[in-house]
Amino acid sequence: SQKIEQNSEALNIQEGKTATLTCNYTNYSPAYLQWYRQDPGRGPVFLLLIRENEKEKRKERLKVTFDTTLKQSLFHITASQPADSATYLCALSMNNNAGNMLTFGGGTRLMVKP
Amino acid sequence: ETGVTQTPRHLVMGMTNKKSLKCEQHLGHNAMYWYKQSAKKPLELMFVYNFKEQTENNSVPSRFSPECPNSSHLFLHLHTLQPEDSALYLCASSHGGARTGELFFGEGSRLTVL
Image (cartoon, rainbow over all chains, first blue to last red; front, side, top):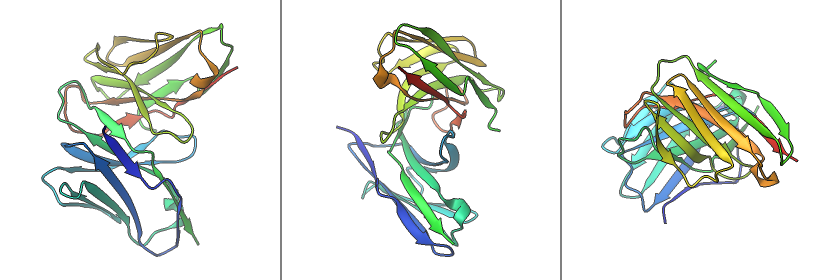
């Protein structure tokens, strides 16, 4: 069966360090992968999208890699700040004409300590 | 402010009640979605509407009934729910028919079924 796995344990890091979150998937051939941020009691907010033919994408302090051979995406936040503390969700999409059919992982909670 | 507004933000209902959740988007999108987010579980896709046509019903029980009168509005009608239906219900929108592009989520409606 198809599965998306994110580390369910919280990731605790010190301010200023680089946070690295992992998203692994099985039995998928996604056309692209997205990362979202979700704060408690709020809806997810889109951060980055990376396509199957792209290896790496950057946006300010964020970097995403996509390895379709390993079936893994890594999400990096450099120079992390306490304000980066949130839950980060990865989502995969298949090629589909019926709207944007995203399947989400369970998310990893990041805690950045000052 | 994501451009997607959900009401009510909080709802408490008994198992015999009938209530509705409302979603409105001001982004000019043509696809709208309902997701369910339960504690410690990934976001679950419930329904997809693309250009007002329902294109996905992810095996959702009939006690949940969606309605999409136009591309800007989406409703979720609730009837004879169970306590296990208590969750955060998230509405999202995106460009219709597109296979890529991010989802814009509302802040969610927190539903408690007694």
